[in-house]
Image 1 (cartoon, helix red, strand yellow):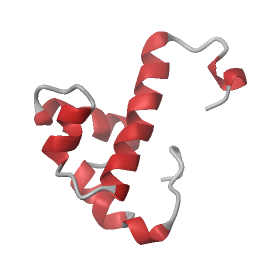
Image 2 (cartoon, helix red, strand yellow):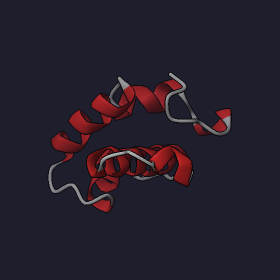
Image 3 (cartoon, one colour):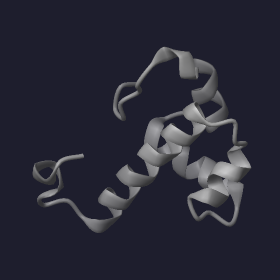
Image 4 (spheres, helix red, strand yellow):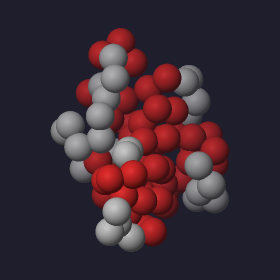
Amino acid sequence: MTVEKLTGTGYRQIRDQLLAELAVRHLRESGLSVEATAALLGYHDAANFRRAFKRWLGRTPRDFRRRYPSSWGVYQIGEV
């Protein structure tokens, strides 16, 4: 994410973009469970993380892992 993209962007949008990027990275590059990923990102309830992830990317973390396995290379947010 570049500074130019952040100009005029609200706090929630910036936070959600950052959390989405971190979530994608952890789900693709680690063997962590969805629950562990949720906790790592500060979610006390994995269900809330799943809802947020679906809002960000339009699919659940489980569906994301199936569709974009780590062998696919880099995934860019907004690519779906």
